[in-house]
Amino acid sequence: MPVIETPVTLTPSDAGLTDAEVHRIRNDFPILGTAVNGRPLVYLDSGATSQNPVSVMEAEQEFYEQRNAAVHRGAHSLAVDATDAYEDARAAVARFIGARTNELVWTSNATEGINLVAYAMSNASLGRGGDAARRFAVGPGDSIVVTELEHHANLIPWQELAARTGAELRFIPVDDDGALRLDEARRVITSSTRMVAFSHASNVLGTISPVAEIVGLAREVGALTLLDACQSVPHLPVDVKALDVDFLVFSGHKMLGPTGIGALYGRADLLNSMPPFLTGGSMITTVTMQGAEYLPSPNRFEAGTQRISQAVALGAAANYLAETGMERIEAWEATLGRRLVEGLEAIDGVRVLGPRADQPRIGLAAFDVDGVHAHDVGQFLDDKGIAVRVGHHCAQPLHRRLGLTATTRASTYLYTTTDEVDAFLAAVAQVRPFFGAE
Amino acid sequence: MSTGLEQLYQQIILDHAKARHGSPLADYDGDGRVGESHQLNPVCGDEITLRAAVLDGSVAAVTWDGAGCAISMASASVLTDLVQGVPRDEAITLVDAFREVMRSRGRIEADEEVLGDAAAFSGVSRFPARVKCAMLAWVALEESLLAANG
Image (cartoon, rainbow over all chains, first blue to last red; front, side, top):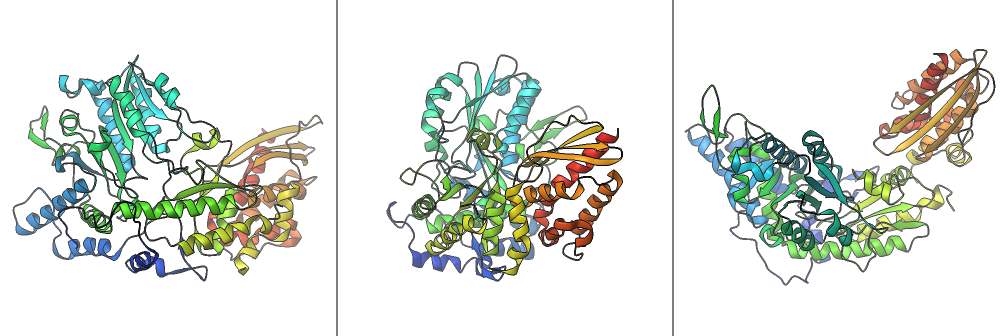
């Protein structure tokens, strides 16, 4: 398992990966060499889930073969080894996003991370956590703010929190191109606002949100902030301290890690005053038949036996990305994103959602093909071995706002080649003729 | 092009996807009982609202509004042609026959004598992700006929 102390910065930020490097990187991903429907796999669905390098799979296997034991309990050597592996992984992932180790809580995925915060706030609203937790409490007269472009994972937990507590759920709308309306944000975020939860990068549009501006508005009114970083942590350098958010969530399976593991970052002072969500073993100090005292973060939020092997594998994934260099990955994907958008816009009857090619975006593009449903587009591409996402991408309100029910999304990663993007574009150009949509 | 895609998108399906027989949804002002059903596939957002009128035990009219992929829209169009004027019980038998083919994972080839143009959907059963698209209108008809009965 590769172990490094600090993220390696080998090159200036404007120098992305080269085609030759990408081809070398691909050798680390066995699945990229497979065939689908008799054609070489062109995997353009990393926005949904990424593929795993051998080092990640080996880290998980090595853990089971040599170190498997329960962590934070037991005094035997294997338990110590397992705990070390588990905590080393936490340190690696925390370092990867610029967090301190006690600020990184393991979750199953980003969805659980958001629910953890929403339910902790719910518990605080019922008085749990006492005075220290009062700043997490919401009720009638308070508001929670999200945006119109959120993934359902960063919408429904807040709808539920509002419904449970009587708080009001508001949203920052998008304009006709899908850009967040900062002018409206200034009206939506008010002195009643307790939480502002929003995406760092849109999983549909590929746009990067104006984090500093929105965090600034939240700070002015004393509201907490939570950033859904599912589409940013895997694809660009993320430093939680520079972003200055209170909470941040992401999923392991979108950043070369296994499924079943993700993380919640929270400022230490907040996590240590927040009531727990899930309760049980391994998160307590003293327990009587009447009540319990809780450990500080991160253990407070990690009740029960944890996802140890997945955490270890996610640590390996973070190290793989750090060694490759997030600036270089970001630059490479920006190149691919431009190629995608320019290529799609050149195809008759194809409309790309979100910003035009000259605007900053992560390496994905969702698009509509006039006269052909996204499901049919995806089926046509699958026949050529090209894997894309079709549907509403768990963002129904955004699609409704843009006048669409379903779109097709191609999303790239560090292992995507320009040849793959070109093969995809050539196939999309054949879609409307095939379905007779001209 | 692989045979898989040709099996799935037979010309007759592509034609029906555009022709959309029975669409749009229309008020039924004749005699008999009317049932309506709305079906949604949450995976892709395919949607259909189908209205069926039953008069003297037979399907007197079927109309629908829908938004969705070629498979779901063509399936609704084919279905409309197939069940017009057919006894209600027979229409339900047709739904069952179609469902059996769809669930067969390619093992059962539809009988063209029974299912007519709907036999062209046999290939869909090899694509499990698309079976729900093909079934959407048929489930809507089944529910509409049930509602018209009650």
